[in-house]
Length: 158
Length: 107
Image (tube, rainbow over the protein chains, first blue to last red):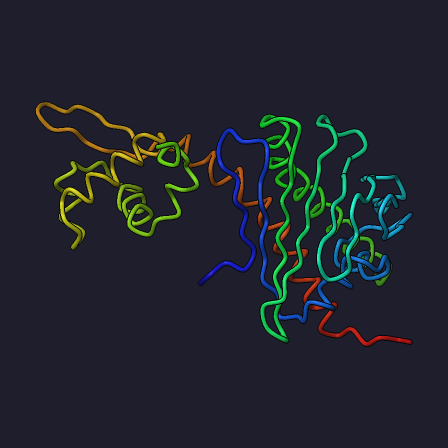
């Protein structure tokens, strides 16, 4: 089976590309990146600030079930062209690597399908590799949090 | 050629993936590996060379024969490295697709 989301990260380089084809018209794909309430739904984070325009800034924040801030990230938009592209910076608070530059390109394939290409540039190859390794640890955390949620719900029903 | 040493490029090729699968449970000589494929022997040799260059395979001299075996450490590195990251984006994008398929403009 062809994988829908592809990551191309050549060894020793300080950038990577994520590509994905969607069963969605271009306009809807872009909207999913331009409206905070929609971003919240698929990114699983709270959007604290979102100024979708050139020189605008954005800020995400996620809290764990106990209400502690688990994830914070922010950046600015350098380019924000509806149905075309978004160029933005992304920086995670308390990450051991610095800011990264993201180029998002939105392409129409057919009336009902579209493609997103995310080119992410890091300060160094080591920074990139660090971030690539993150989801492994993060994934374990998320699973743990979900488990806690489920367990606490079970307790309530007991 | 730089591409040759890129592990991700290396595992992108179906024949090379098949070779890695074949060697997952056993060490084999180039001849024994080639016998499993319809591809010409020099083509298989080329694939072995690429896989060895990017350290996914290791050669071991055993008498007069050279055996190929998988470099588990490197394989693990590749798998651990990119997969969770790809999965993370795949999950997010699957969700995005679901959300937008149900999307109705409320204005």
